[in-house]
Length: 270
Image 1: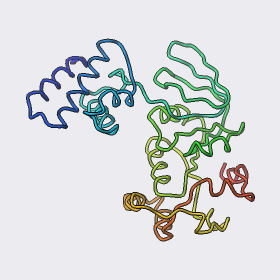
Image 2: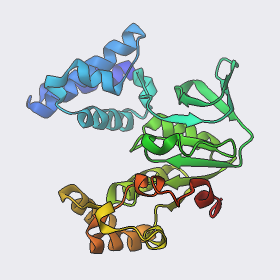
Image 3: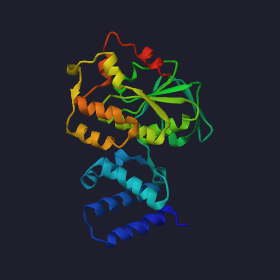
């Protein structure tokens, strides 16, 4: 079986033999970068890799796609390129991480989710984990009754790994904005993690008599996302409602109401 160095070298030679356009330049730079990382024993995250060569990669998504492509082509994982997971997800709770070196690290309160590539087990006493889309409301949902996790919008791989590691020991719920991107974020989680979306929902708008002036008009990207979401039966009713209303609703709309108790709201589902 070829080692990763040989795979990189052969792929690099193949790209160099072809027509050198913008796409080829991105591949060449990426392959040279990961070869250098592996050879030196250093590591970096995808964000740093992008910023090191912005004129070539143009966008962060270009780097993300190259990582996925060559992980698949070479039959390896991102970490085999010495590319570390970006750390942006946070959690609130009391847990113990068992590391690959057998070290135990205790966490309590609000913390950044550490690099999960070094973790083999998460010990905790929770029955429920609550995933919150936005960090702007994260602190208002913190409770000793459950483990709270926030991916700050679309989750990074590290946040998904964290949830995947506790998936078999807790029931995972998700709370997002009632808008096209909130629904899509849930689907991104759902693709990897067994979880239940508890809100925001159509009935929340009706129960709390949310006024149109409290909502936000759908923009172009929202409408395009709606078209993508219509094929998913589990959220079709919500998508249809949002499209018909022409408006979207953020979590803050309910959180800022005097008659809204988040823990009473969550207790209906947990």
